[in-house]
Image (cartoon, rainbow, N blue to C red):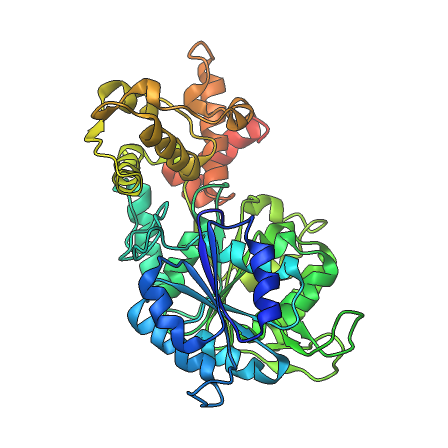
Length: 454
């Protein structure tokens, strides 16, 4: 969010002042404007990343839903700008319409400052830089094609193309930094609901109380600070896609409430006894392995079946071979442009350093390493000494050594045991797939599993 320029358009001077004070130390620049008729002029004079746009003004337009009018103006000329609609309770229905017409999110007055900051922080991850159409992605190009030419990425591309147009609920699995949220965006953009809302919620970060109010909404008076009705994220995503990130981190009680909504296809806002029908396509993601989710003391098996019609495993970078070089060159081009550099490429030592590294932080770590290298490089190419890896990830590297990194002095039995265990884990316990991968019959694999106590 530090790199974002935010424009707030509202005819309440006190609110403009409050937001300017709140955001000034947290963003690159805050611009405020009372008159929406000056909006397009301001956008022509400044590179803006996010517009906070009130839905109702006392202006010459006088349509009754001025926010939608100005939203259309912004998106027609600056489609890359993220627009967050600001509304009071009486215009919540219009705010939901705004999501379907291109708004990134909406927020209801009066808001808590933390809520506004959370909304802007979430959006800023995809905010354009320097007025360009889109910020760099870790896996997905601007045309939604996947970056990479390895066999595992071709398989991933095929699976996404196959399942995206369906209504299947999808569980995206993968380590931190592999780009699960970008895969979710690609699934939505290639779906039949692409023109409808795409709503993301980091459910793992929500307390139990916030979990219900954020997802299901609430009625005025439902709790102390509930001064107005507010719809939840399920309703906001109606007709579109709801992405629940870090779903493996929610508690059993939250799981029970989520399962009830998915079974009944309706939400009951806090403080209400009346269900509201919802029509969503559900995407979920977690870095928790599927075998760990199968432990019913931690995760309900019936919920797994609900969210996991199809599972997509996003491979770690260490399993993607030469994609490391492909991605490195992609990031090099992007940061060349961003930092006004003219670095021609990576030299031999730099390429060898990238190829030989484990990347416990996956594509995200590679991206940040290349950004630092571009900033620090002084010559026409990136040298090995320009590339530094994060010490934060080093302990993860030690704790997650792969079979390829094991000492060559180990016995053949040790190697066979590790190969079998790795194959079974890779296919999430599917013995048929693991046996085909290993070139064994199912019976032979079972005998070896018994031999090695796997």
